[in-house]
Every structure is written in structure tokens, then in C-alpha cells.
Length: 432
Image 1 (cartoon, helix red, strand yellow):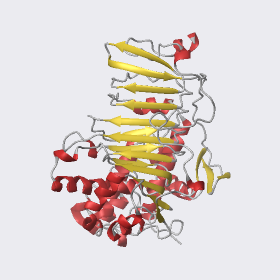
Image 2: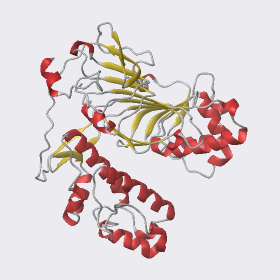
Image 3: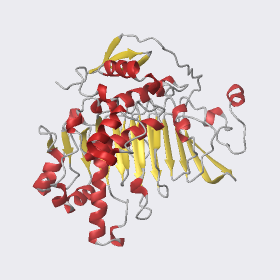
Image 4: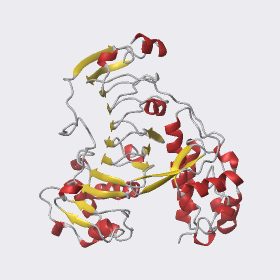
């Protein structure tokens, strides 16, 4: 314990890290407090719940340090979070709960989740979320409790519900989509609006209805919106046994049978001038281990392996989807400055960023200038603005020049980064 304490910054602003090791275990709950900027050394922490807390500017570093975190619940009440990153390499279950806080409030929150092992996601409320993974096993979409319907007119509620559809493309990779009754009511209230929008769900197997709701209650417009991009998907009231999720989106908010017995939790109340509210810590057995964090790999290794149905390869020491290796080689050859500042001392996080970069760039690399439209420009700008925040420097401006030729001044401020036009519609990246 003494060795670990010496390695961290001792400060009255961080009373949590000074607690004995035996009190810091696998489950940590923080309720209505201001988090310190000190990065905690909790390498074996499995579950974390943050309820209406004030986040420091280095929250990303705090998440990165939680190298074993598998379950995360975030509850936002008064925060309008913008460009909020959640980099957790081992995260499996994520729940984000958002409460309405004024008309210009929480639905503008933009959350980017860098979690390659994420399988289960639950949302409550309206916010924008983007995932590194292309598919999710289970997605639960909830609206109950986000706002008080009695405080708003029917027209105001419909406006909220239309805005609600803006977050759904970020959940398009769901295989099993679980809808609660309030969510179905919200989408049904804008049934006519949905007819002018394509289905965002391209990977569906099942849409599960809540208890008491029958498939006959789903309008044809809503049905088309939910299933239009997944023609083999079905609407069910009970999932087949072999598709039931093995883990839940929240460990402490739902009934969960854990894989192994845990010792009874210990609860500690911490009171501090810099922690204005009480901090509740639930603890169970956890070991503390040293975490190595070197970044290595400068050679372009061509070694491949497989996990499930996904093939992986090595690019300069980093594990990436095998289809990305050619793309990365092409960009490195023509625009090496792109990768000058994307690495971090945590190799897992660097690998996650690299795969997110490839996922974002891959589709644009297959686009011909003749198919570019104004909607695509907006998406192009947003994607590369996010990539710039992850440390990927701007690519050369030939692509922007080509877009400006087509669209004039409309394309003048496209992005902080862009793909070179000579990478577009080339033989390596043309869809077959």
C-alpha cells in the first residue's frame, strides 16, 4: 500500500486516493461530487458509476487509467457535455442517463466512446453518441424520466421527439434493439415525420417490445423506420433463449448474477471541502497491479490473427482490422504528418484511436467526387473535427480544393482535416 501511495500525488484535493487499498475494490460509486484532477491508480477497478458529478478537464486521462473497467454508468443532470470522450479498452457494458436541463441543454451533448470490447449500451434521454465499434450486441433505448411530459405542450414534445431521432444513427449497429413503452410512444407520435427518413438500423436481428406491447400496435411507418435497413430482422416480445444478453448495461442498477462470489461491500463516506457532497464507495475484493504503458512499434509488420469473424493485422506494432492496413499504408506514404501526434503512453488507447481513425476514414476513401452532396460535407466536417481532437493532424488540402471546385465557398470551412483526393475511388478502396 505504501508503495502505491508514494507513486501518487498526495493532496487534500484527492481524499479518495489516500484511502487504504483494502477499501478501494471492484465497484466504485460517486454521487454528486466534484472529481479531483488526480488520475487514480485503480488498475483492477471493474465497475464505476458517476452520478451527477462535476468532471475535471482531464477526465479522459482518468478513464484511460482504468485499464480493467468493464461496467460504466454515467448520469448527467446539469451538464451539457460537448466533445466528451470515454476511452476504456476493456469496457463491455455502458449506461448513459441524461436529464433535460433547459431547451438548449443536454440533448446537445456529444459523447465519443472508444471501447473496442463494448457489447451492451443503454441510453436514457437525448444526446449524441458515437462508438468505435461498428456493431453492438444489445442496445436499450429509454425515454422514461428524461422530462416531465406534463410541463410541455404536444407540439413541444413532438419537437423533442424529432430531435430524439438525431441520436439514433449513432446506434445503428445494434443487433438487438430493446425499446421501452415511452420510446415507442415518442416515435409513434412522429410517425409521419419518420417516413421521410431512412432507417438508421442496418445490423438488426431483433426489435424487442416491452411487456404489454404487441407487434400489432406498431404502425407501418414506425415498422418501416425500424426494420427498413435490416430486411431479415423481426419484431418480438420475447427474445430467443440463445440471444438473451449475458451481461447487463449496469451492474448496480439491475439484478445481476455475478460470475464469482464477492465479499460483502464496505461503504465509506468521505467529506471534504473540495468534495462538497458525500462520496459513497462500494467495495469488494480487488488486487493492485503495476501497469506497463510503453508505446512501441515502428516497423510495418504483416502479421494477422483472428477473433470471431473479424480478421486483424499489425500495422507498425498496432492491432487493426486487416482491411485497414492498405488504407494506413497509403496515407502514411502520401501524408505521413497525419500520424505525428496520435500516439499516447497507453498503447491500448493508441490502438483504439487508430482503429477509430480507420473506421471514420474508410468510407470517405471509397467516395467519388461525383457522389458528394451537402449532407456528406457536413458529416465529413464533423468526423474530421473529432479525429483532430484525437491527435490526428490535418491531411493535405487537395480534397478540400476539389470540393470547393464543386461547391464553391460552401466547402471553404469543411474540416480541420481532409483526405487527399488521390486516395478517393482508387483501386484499393473501391467497393466490390
